[in-house]
Image (cartoon, rainbow, N blue to C red; front, side, top):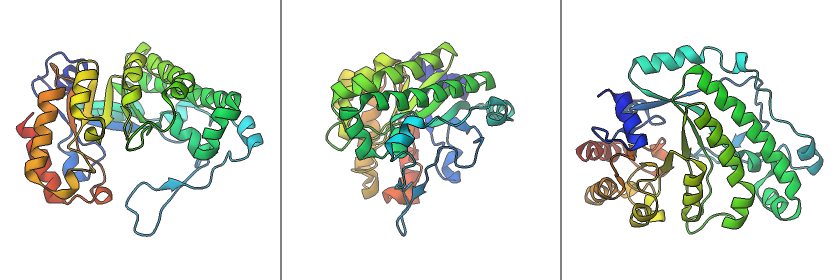
Length: 316
């Protein structure tokens, strides 16, 4: 069985030979372990979304957006997403994707943040939350226009030969969803349904990163058609809870917990978690081990991560 076939069987839960490793955004010495890769498009305009990430001194994280281009209500009403201009945006992408397939790698098309993160980068998170309560039509217009753009991009990836789309929106705090599940279902569920349906109609799988405790909406994401969910903090959900409520219904791309486990370098605890993921979440597939992309940001040294990867292979 090829690596691509094994990944396909993992996602569809149809009996892979082993649990694959997803190390796409990892340092180069770890990326060679990855069974999949993400290819991205080219921006048509410089800083085409109008926001940028700022960092504190010695900050190893991705940073945060502090200047929001749609902070003013009139700007938000007048805003339109950047033009897709497929010929420019996807120039050379088919060839890059085929080159990865020739290396027997499963190829995702990266679309960045799906919708929520783009909305609060543009508008500002406190203002966006206020809009949901006081100006819902502005929220709907902003979200609809972002999703229109994303659906065009999804179709472009399909035409270029990608196997699936890879995106994300962080929805959870450490103990709950950022907004009420009712409000999430009112505003955001229809947008995810439309993007995921567009992908499936194009023959693509859907991969979603989302940090935090999102137990309240994982069934909704499954209803929307999500194929793979990326969880860097499985113990926040509770692995037993995931096994009961979601295993066998989608594929997990997950790891020994990046906050509670990996930074402490306790090999026995890391092994216990890697084993538990395999024993509890695997359902004729439906599990890949992920390697976190920025070791410095989570305080994990190279030796610990190398040991984690060895354990992933041990229980694969």
